[in-house]
Amino acid sequence: MVHAPAAELCSFVDASPTPFHVCATVLAELEGAGYRQIDERDPWPTEPGRYVVVRGGSLIAFSTVASTSPADPFRVVGGHTDSPNLRLKQHHDRRPEGLGVVALEPYGGAWTHSWMDRDLGVAGRLALRDGRVELVRVDEPVLRVPQLAIHLSDDRKGVQPDPQRHLDALWTVSPQGGFLSWLAGQAGIDADEVLGFDLMAHDVTPSRLVGARQDLVSAPRLDNQGTCFAGTRALLGAPDVEGVRQVLALFDHEEVGSTSERGAFSDFLTGVLERIVLAAGGTRDDVHRAIAGSVCASGDMAHATHPNRPERHEPLHHVELGGGPVLKVNQNLRYATDAVGSAAFARACEQAGVPLQRYVHRADLPCGSTIGPLSASRTGMTTVDVGAAQLAMHSVRETMAAADVPLYAAALSAFLAPQD
Ligand code: ZN
Image 1 (cartoon, rainbow, N blue to C red):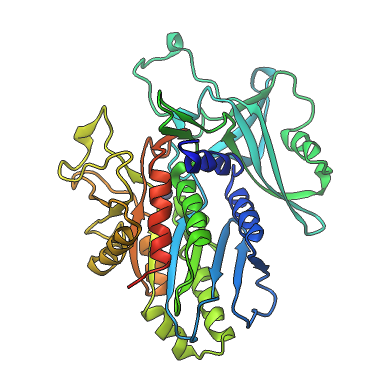
Image 2 (tube, helix red, strand yellow):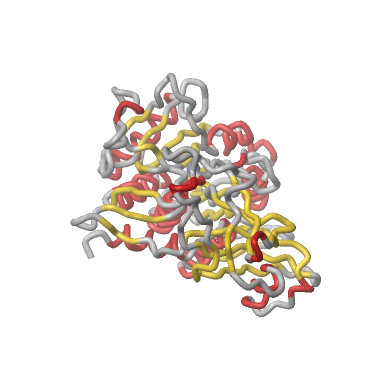
């Protein structure tokens, strides 16, 4: 197939409806390539190797096989596993007009009108009485958030739905029992054993290549599974470079501020890096020496110039679909990029032989942010925000160019394996 990497991205996204499933997908891929999972509760392995750690919806993988000293620098590719969506409320069973309705609320900056009139599945994790945590997923279209008919609307232009009143999902016309009981039954679990849950809706229409030449990707959650996929491929494809330790760090909770036990503002990355250095026989001083020489490429998706709305973009910084990876700069530190980080990523693109685009948001529009500034402030590491171009960010269905998938992965791979 011409666009094989993009088709593989589609499979990756379809396998990963929630942050927990992203971690499971990446973990399976890494274990298949010889990575070994570490439990944070266990002593850290002292021998160099390829390892992966999962903390809820966050994952850090690293390779120390080419390390020669405890103070060797890290090359880190970062990203986030979560995407804006609709999530189940604790008491979610409603019976308006005798119908079975599930109460949902937005997570992050979901473009909520795009979730209406779509076939939605449900997935997440259940915490059971005996301490087990089970991933669950139903990829059938079991939920539906219907729009109001145009004839009944008082504003035919259409508006963002009210997040409290307009986003509940119909799941049956004849409710018998609650939705959670039904879902637990689907997973073969006794509903009485479920004491906690993180459950969310997802678009069940399969991701696919579209366009007359199949050179576009139509998929949910490209922000930021585009980076999770490219970063995983980058880590697996990067050659070992003597004296460099390669890290992939994928965080949950970016879309809601990153401040949790596993977000980019947590101690997860700093803790893992510290344990790597100490387990290699290093000192506290070696931890600081290693981080002082390290660079992080914070990967997140970027705004391609919209064909119907080019005036919404900075006129000197148009970003093309298919034009290669994007360097993201914001003087007010919505992105962490500075001159030194920019140069490090530009060199990686040169090394990979891929073009580099430079993005600046319009000064009269509020700029989104990424894990970059938060992770940088926790680690003290030089950080550069980068990404791949897409349209319709935070819609239930997003679009990118198939050609950008391998270009992005190649740039991240070169970043992990600097030749200079
Ligand atoms: Zn993002």
